[in-house]
Image (tube, rainbow, N blue to C red; front, side, top):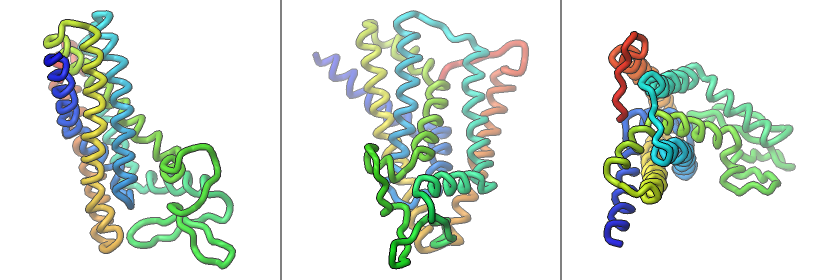
Length: 265
């Protein structure tokens, strides 16, 4: 029983530490750079962690239970996807395509009469009540069976971090599974460890995204020019780090050569 509790505790805290990997932090920084509240940022972090956990649990369990091996070229290809995704997120942020996509999705969600204005350093989407007063998206009542947090974020905001988390999970699932195999001999315990590890990642990413969103949200309300600078910097950082990962994977790791050398990490 003591060993079981040790595995649970270790898995949870290692999962929280895993959330602080540089590529994870860069990705979520780009995603939450336009969020106005820490709560929304924390929910985005939880969705990223959920997508990451789904992949880790699925791929990792297959490796543990069925003794699957991932060829070096496939492993490097999954890591390349992370770099390409970071480049794409950064470009979308820098060009404003991401902002326009969010605006379009929000206007469609709110309905007819909705429009946007540049206010407080960001594009604010709203409609008007019967007296002509603006009603911003956070207070718009949208009927439906979906929970309140889903209605406030919208489908686009929900799917984006979920997909990014899934891609990151593909790149890291093999390393986590192999680490578990070397330490835990019982397959059922190993799969349970992956689940606890995933829950730790969700918790860690919620804390990280909330902390990252704080300067963005504060500057959006009080320092519009500083906020635009922070958003631009996050986009450039994402592009630069994405190119660095692609170079490491393609040339240092050997994906683009005849002899790929992949070490899961």
